[in-house]
Length: 346
Image (cartoon, rainbow, N blue to C red; front, side, top):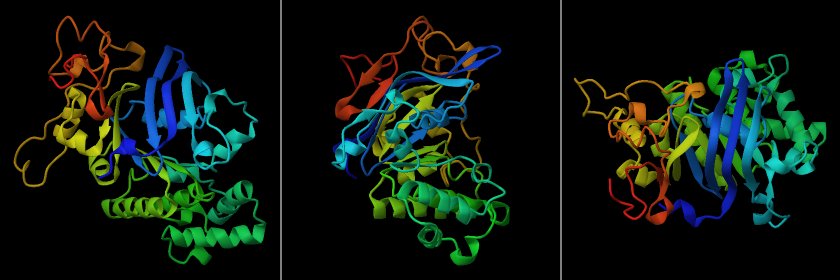
């Protein structure tokens, strides 16, 4: 497999912080995230529910609604530079009416939201929603947009697309609604597809078909994919690079083969141990990570993971912010178990 860093950066996230003001206090949902999506590659962002994966994805396109707000960091888009049409720019610095932001949303960057049934408008046909997106981002007239909408439905594997184009979301299954969302996200042939847990709540057969569809469309359109999931089986199947998140922070980044062969962070190791292996785990209890993700309103002092970590060092992990250690090849882990001068010591 090609090393993930061999491709050019398409999107770079640096120091991203997103918070929500609640009656009980400020929730730091994303707390200094650094991520890079490379052109034509798949970055999987993985972690338990509530670790900030979806908020990170929404922050990229500035789709965080009140009481949430983006407090800091940069989101640098290099797509215009790579395709020769312009320069790199920081998405977070743009005015709301900047045409670059409008072009980015649904144009250069397509997004598949977590709940397709909730994301599609129930009182409009799926064709009308596709046609509207096509007309906004491609300038097609209504007749041409309808023809292209039928082609897109066919491309994502919906049977009888000429009839289904006039169907309402409630007339389609969950898997078909997800395919419609993929079609909408691909309307403008984006350079980057952000997929926020697109296979959640789907049966395994439909899940496999959706993953195959995303892979084939990625190869056809040569687009990058930022895939958000908690399913490590999906990660093993589609990722080039993996970012592991915990309580709003990226605790480990590495190529997919490195993550599975030699995980560095204790949280990553425990996530992998909790995945059942066919034939190995029969007749015995599956290992679990003790405890739960802490309430972000009451973050533990020091390393956020230390209350659940079997390798925590008393007097250090519970007091000191863990450093981000860079290993050979550019992979990183945020943990005090690794000394900067002895990168490979566990």
